[in-house]
Length: 428
Ligand code: GAL
Image (cartoon, rainbow, N blue to C red; front, side):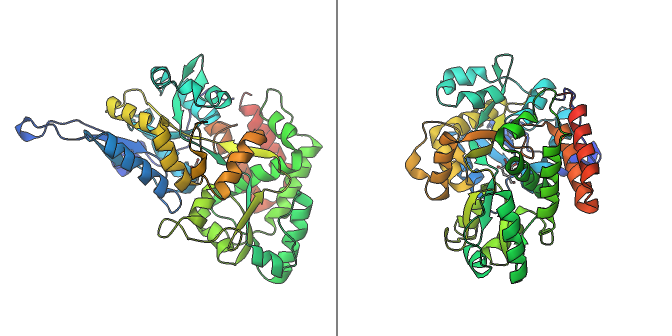
């Protein structure tokens, strides 16, 4: 895993900082000595449909519990947070952190920790007895040398195949494909029927698709082994996985602007399949205007992405306490709310995720979410690439670049060489 704190920021730091609406709790004394509400700048990328509803629910609880603070939404638009993270890293480098920011448990967060950007929050874990309520394997992902550095708010699943049952029926496809081979057969049938076989969004959605195809082609143990010391990315099984990815990509429709319009093509009956994380569930299912208000098992349905049944490819959004944060008390109040049962049970049913806490109220998680809860406790685990679990920002950026080039030139050997180099450079 890489040790350096680096970024690939295309715009100048000054420009980005100007772009960021700087809410950072200044705690000013208003005229007449009355204390103004201190702002708490909460940084995320949950602005779009299917994302913003959950944040709003946490914000409401936060406001109720903390009348002395004012929530300031510093969210930066763009699915999966690639744009948000570029801005965030400039802010951190300029020592202008938001009061708290969303980061992914695992390698991504470890990058922030090792570069000294975060304060440990063991005091919160002790005070709120959080070690008893979060799964140990999750705590391990946010711990360095015994110090815990964030509060996980959810568990999302990455390897989900969303599909339109009537489009499948009309194409003569009998239910969701179980293997990568069946998937390819079904994509060809849909193509013949005149519909878009597979919808895709912007570049990051291809990395998202890639991680599911890699897992489905290699199997869980071989996939997990790719992220361990001395992993072999050059072998023939990886080559086969990349060939599968090439075949699957050949059935993709025109790239949409982000994940929502790609998921919508499935809901609207224009496309048969989409591979996306389960934030797509809240977008498809939530009532308008936050979601599309579609009916599950009728307008859309889901299954494990092909070849991955029995494995939960996970990721977790977690909130941090940056060093030198302008409103530390406000940030701690946010973290306490995010850690609480009340906060998690308000956020997750709207976000399409399940709570990180083991003791949340299961009756609130219905339909897709009850399936996800069951799967989480009964499956093997694999970590997401795109969403920060197995590769840190720098490694992920190298993989993203390789996937982007591959989308254009379709050269499997070159793609594999780039992935081997990315793994070598990662210092893993
Ligand atoms: C992920 C994030 C999810 C969701 C998704 C799409 O990286 O963990 O919570 O926001 O991006 O934007």
